[in-house]
Every structure is written in structure tokens, then in C-alpha cells.
Length: 390
Image 1 (cartoon, rainbow, N blue to C red):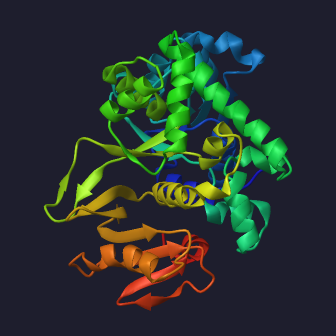
Image 2 (cartoon, rainbow, N blue to C red):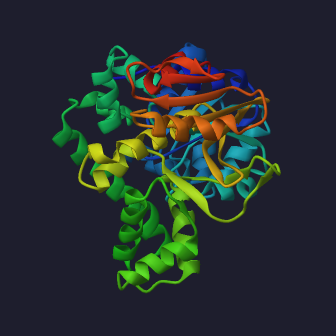
């Protein structure tokens, strides 16, 4: 099944027919090949286009960049999936770009890293990061209504587009998600970086999955692993964390001091790019983790709609999210349920301390969460995802 991911098509549309190279980057199985097809069908139908998937046997001869160049040079619009399989691919691509071609690329992040693109393409490109489904896309793709039951389905396993081809059955979905995770760890990290002890790598991922709500430092993680009789240096931990970010398994969120307007360079919070892979790592959805799962989901829904996010700090109080986009700024606290006055005070009090007029939100799963408290909007988290103007 093919779902038209309109927000990405709208983001890419202004660059169609332009001679800047368009590059789609992604976590595995987020549907980047399908998105190439959608771009072609939506904007370039009946135009002189060519699509080459470099993972197909019939295209192996084009691994020679000169043969590849001869194949595509007479087309105006060029789509190349898994471009890293072409030896010296950047020579052909830059030559084509100099001829004002409209070029779209994807690649495997086990072979090429984002940091290498600037060198290979001399800054003549624009990147589009493709995320798993946000909640609004999930509802549209599966033709579902915004109900509590459907939101719980989303919490359990509903992000990766390929799930459209599977039933929303926990056992089937989690088997698929575990296989995606194994590919990320074993192929994209262990193989690329020649990791000798994959067990330590997996123990680190498991630790992060169990503590997704915490602010971390490399030193703290090292101390914990040593308490488990795992000897590893802080430098190695930091290296492994960078690998997780490079393959889009984790997102790093820095802390922002709201009083002094500065970003802290140590102790970050990490969110899973796909919380359902995190659930699969731990054996499935655990209702006891729901507060932390909700926080992770808010983070990725904001990031996938091009908000920049920070963990806020104000006079030693933590604000779950400070989010910025196009000159806008909002503050967000996330809770499972506002069950009593003590919880209400904790969640609203931190926001009330912030002395500016920017919009402030408390998001929870309460059925009655639809009113304001001293200027702070209290909303159902699922309504925020569907109604908020991202």
C-alpha cells in the first residue's frame, strides 16, 4: 500500500525543477523509496524522468559511474535509490548537476554519513530527513478516527510505513520492528564501525530504552555499566551514542537555560526516533512506561514537523520541551494523567514560573483536558497532534 505523505511532498515541492541536489535521509523502513515515486508522480508525471534502484540486479552494470552517467545524462529529472552503490558516484552526480539536472538521491546510512555529504557534494545539496509516521499521518494512512483506542494503537506500534502491509497485530508488528532494529544495529553500526563486542552495544541501547526520560552524560552511563560488571570507557560510550544518532536510531536533545538564554553542552536527553522500536527492544508495550512513551512521542512529532526542541531549565525546574520554529516558541509539559492537585501543581507550576507571553501547554491523556488554567492550555495529547498548527 502507498500513502501520500503530503507534508514531505509540500516541503520538497519548492525545490522541484531546481538544480540543487535533493537528498532524502531516513531511519530504515520509513518509506524513502516510495517517497521518490510520489515526487515523480505528483510533480513530474509525463516528464522526461529516470528512476534507478541501485539495489536491483539489473542495474549492477551502472556501478561504474561512467556507465551510470551515460545511462542518465539525457534525462532532465534523475532519481537514484541507494546511490552509494555507484563507485565514485559523486563524480557523476556533480557533473550532472553542472548541467542543471533535477536530481533526487537516497543512500544507505551504513555506507555514507550525513557528515560526508558536504565533502562529496561541495555543499550543493539540500537534505530532507524522513521520519516515521506522526500521529496525524498514522490516522490518515490507516483510515482511522482520532479516538482513545486508536491513539493507544499508535503508542504500541504505529509509525513505520511498512506496517500498512501488515495487520495491526502486536505479535506480527513487533517481530517486524525487532528485525528493523537488528538491521540497524548489526548492519548499520556493527558492520560499518567494525564493533568487536556487539553485546555491549546492545546493552547500551537497552539501558537507554529503559531510561528514555532521563538526562544523561557519558560518565553517568559508564558508571552504571560498570555496576553491571561491564567495563567501558566514557569515550567509547560517547562514540556509540554518536553512531546511534548517525543511523537515526536516537535523537539528542540539549538543555536550554531559560533564565540565562544559553544552551548547555553537557548532559543531554535522548529520544528514540521510533518509540515502537524502543518498545520492541524491551519485549513490547508496557503500560507502566506510558508517561515516558508520551514524552518521546511529543518529541518526535515536533521534530518531524520541523520544530527545534530543547529540554528547558528555569531555576532548577525542568520544562519538558522548549520548541522553536520560524520565530515561534512554545513551552510544553507532558503528563500521563493529571490525577490530583499535587500532579496538577507540578505540571502547571513550572510553566507558570516562565515570565513571558509565549504559548504554554500541558498535554495529557485526560478526557477532560480541554480548558485553560491561568493562561496555560490543557489539552488531550492526541488533540494537540491533530489540531495544533504545526
